[in-house]
Image (cartoon, rainbow, N blue to C red; front, side, top):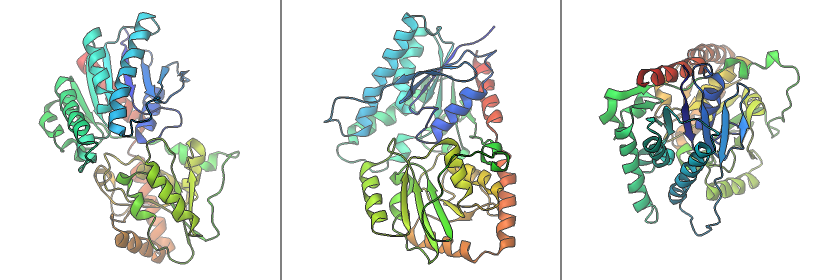
Length: 390
């Protein structure tokens, strides 16, 4: 007998804005479709069918309410669209009645719990970014919505049969530490072959911009939790270019505007905008240093990708080792760049002083470490959670 999980995600599997979208893509691509008849409702996605037959339905994130400037408030508005789409699909029999509702983050929790209550499905709450731990000092406009969002996080943990965390560090934060008895820690994964371009002869990709010999690359959302505001202001040593890759979705527009201004006024700093999939992976293998100086990180999938990119024989990872990254990174596989302007500059200086043998040893350790984390393992562990509550 097959089971029918329904996945609600605030990110999309195709052209994702961050690690959650990559997680959704790999979960949907690897799940055992003979046992699980999965349907996914994903914010910002186009309706599509994955190669293995999994149905994806998009939830339109646009609203004509131009006065709603608070992203938290807009997230509350999105909840109704997730619920409405699910009820529509059920009434039209485009998706079967679910056995499980897999809720990803607080931003789909209200809708997910409502769908579970109506259908009798068992909710599973997966934490990929905690609003209560990410935003420590909400603005006056955000305060009431932020308080409400934190309560939703607690309620989702309380009401769900299982809580999924991507790192041990995150599971120990409040309020998640109260629910350790029903928490499973399931880290993200990597496909090493996605970063092995020795087996591809027809890669369609641009080159990293700039005339300097050494390329330092940032990949991710242009957001304060990623510490882009500090990274863009560092003093670069001679012979280095600093390149930023990151799209609009999930990013801070004021921070993007400031980054563009910085790049316009510094001949060694460049903003490439959004780059996805194979082209993004290829550019990571062309960087001398991929830097992830986050101040808050539930897992840090870009750091794991940078480890995999090291198999190209060029890339070294520099990370702040913050949050989930500290759970899987080791000093022999990556440099610690910290989170301050001074520590980042010192880290780049250390990188430039490394010998070829030291870099080679670090890349070897990086690839070996990345190989311990696979999407097949991630998916199998999630399937085990499904089976345990059905």
